[in-house]
Length: 197
Ligand SMILES: O=C(CO)[C@@H](O)[C@H](O)[C@H](O)[C@H](O)COP(=O)(O)O
Image 1 (cartoon, rainbow, N blue to C red):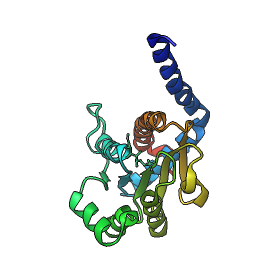
Image 2 (cartoon, rainbow, N blue to C red; image 1 turned 30 degrees about the horizontal axis):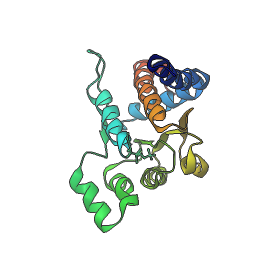
Image 3 (cartoon, rainbow, N blue to C red; image 1 turned 90 degrees about the vertical axis):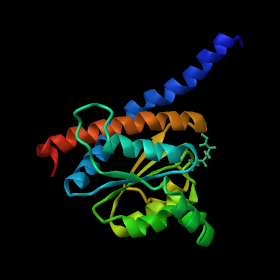
């Protein structure tokens, strides 16, 4: 294959899963509505993930706390991936699987929203974070890829948005589009109290 043919092939692998998002428009809208309800009740968004998705968690948080579009209202959000002291302390003494669950136990409230990102849905600490959040009564949202792994199998998330690819690079790229759409639509619902029940 020629170099430009290769570029077109790589682009095609990305556009097909992105287009698939339209087929899940109802799920996305329901997720955003449920999130807006929590924000109206005074809840905050708590986001977490590993590796690339750890910085996605920070990206999601800043979108809400400091919206890129001037004039958009800020909404409370924190990522659980930025505090190196807490992450390493918990991982060292308790274990990697508890890094997010521990923080949720001590920092989150029942009105809050937990959002876990996992490329294959099999990440132990994201799963444990969602389990802890569910136990607390938080709204649980998962962004996953592939078949959704144990996160889908466990039924721990109230809302699961699946990127239609098993290629971790593509899943991560689709997740960025997903959370930008989530951010935008949550604001639409939040600013229209009539649709909040
Ligand atoms: O994120 C990158 C590279 O983009 C990886 O190297 C990264 O460390 C792994 O994909 C992470 O472990 C992600 O885990 P998960 O999303 O599959 O649960």
